Amino acid sequence: MPLHPLTRALCLCAALALGSAPAWAQSQPPAGRLLASNCFQCHGTNGKGPGFDKLAGKPSREIYEELIEMRAGREDKGGIMAKHAMGYTDAQLLAIAGYLSKQR
Ligand code: HEC
Image: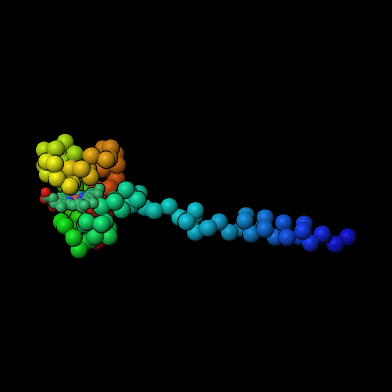
């Protein structure tokens, strides 16, 4: 007995839904990239400029320590970077610094 057209349409939809997850659901951005993307507006995409200080390829420890100083208000007191650094945990700053240091 042939399938009812509605049943056939449902089967087709189910097959499509199972077979092809959208690209965004399959690929996660590299570690730290999503957090670091908050910085691209001023430091350029992936920290490569143009903009304020270039961050791409800087040693991750240097970036991390600068961010810790800024977050504590010891550097760039009341400045724009202090405000930005305050939004992140140690682990998040490490992930951001790690990502930026790997950019060439
Ligand atoms: C609204 C603009 C803006 C955004 C967004 C921004 N920055 Fe900055 N950043 C600056 C400015 C301006 C300076 C220079 C500040 C100074 O020297 O006092 C700076 C300096 C820095 C420095 C010091 C660089 C050096 O060589 O001394 C680091 C590290 C840094 N930013 C990291 C980041 C990170 C990481 C983010 C994202 C979490 C970020 N910035 C987001 C504007 C921004």
